[in-house]
Image (tube, rainbow, N blue to C red; front, side, top):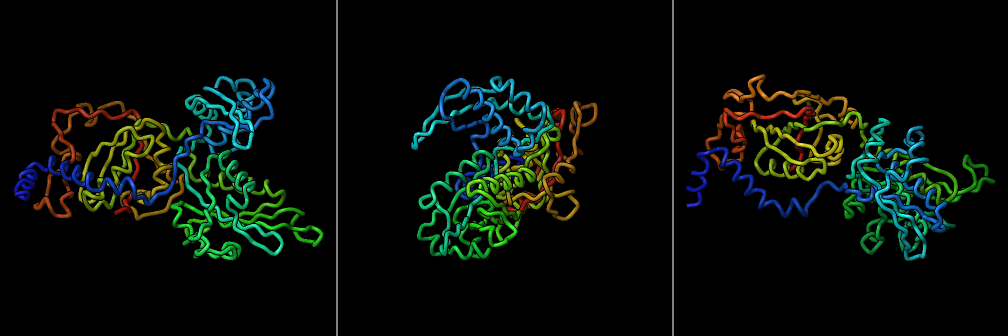
Length: 443
């Protein structure tokens, strides 16, 4: 009986595919909500400045407000060099109050007082755009820090309970740069999985394996020891911090810093923040668009289509997702944007299910964010689709002929039209559209 009903639905291909998509969405919703292969997180305090103060006098407030807006500009752009811009310096010095939405003094559990400023997002973004600065979206890589410190003959893995001051410096530095960092729990599971010698010697395999439970994008292997300059080393007297930023077994960034214990930790975080910003922050002049047309290759069935669509709808700048066309294993989506198109590109760069293609006919290629931007194809057109007439004909690429004979087969997706297209319907094209091509690597 159920089979007969389904075959009746299949008589109308459009309705059938929509029905199956809804059914698949219901069945896969738990896994989409609770299972994830991408671990980047949204940073919620990008437009909040938090400055430690000694008192609440007006003189202190004025200075703290300036420091707070500098902190926010660094977080939003991911680039501290923006503070060197003369326009930015003038705005910070004379007009900081114009950007503040609200402020308050807050005291923490250690009886320290902070001035907390909430800034207008639109005003901050407009200021950055006015000087051609970069914008880095809220979705950012989550990174685990494996830090070993050598004290005498002992080497210990830094964690909150044993090293509260170092943990606080790391936490504050990550907050200043807007990059999510976390320390390991060092519970029984960690202690059985990893030793300080693994991190010190930079053995990627055990460190990578121990990092899996934390669901992070990347991890850091770092070691810190005190250097005595009287022994004639190449370093000055003080603490030497050497680190590697890793993605599984691949080094992304290698660096070292020498100096005060807390300052070298801050320098490491700043270095990592600069690296991430160089990969994901996009020039604001390149990201303006009303919509984005995304062609997705290698979509084998309706399950994969539903998952891909779910991911796209979850991206913060995407207001609406329309399914334009399905042809064999290729799907076209129209993404209407409520924010910057660059945020979509940044977010997709963090999702392992999507891999950027230079061209639909070319093989899969790993591209940097800058290369992705250079390959963008823009369309400026205020006309409707189908030149002058605005009418979609029967030969329009959005109107395809269904070829699958069995609606229950795995290829039921092939060549199925996913729009109820009336030949008299006009389809508006946004003023500026970005065209992107990706390959689906998910399940």
